[in-house]
Image (cartoon, rainbow, N blue to C red; front, top):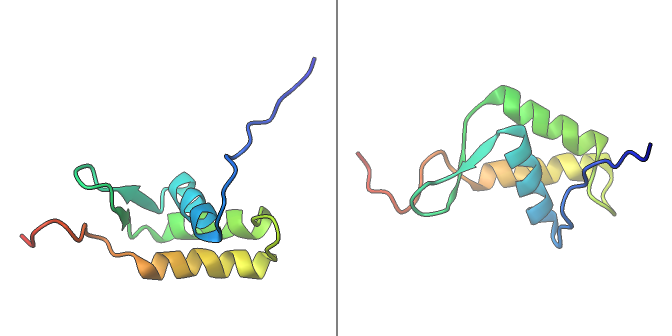
Length: 87
């Protein structure tokens, strides 16, 4: 029987790849109203994303470069939507 493994979609940029990994790990989520990505502030999800990056780096990246891309993406986003007024 032929078994087919689900593949991740082709990603054109390192940032797009990092965003996909973070979404899969549950480390970030999309604002329901505006579409901005927000950090879930879950250290376990952050660790899962780093482990995925180290074990399955994007094409052309070393494991260390892949983890650095994940960390860079995490530091670039906050835990609130920039379009929402403060409550």
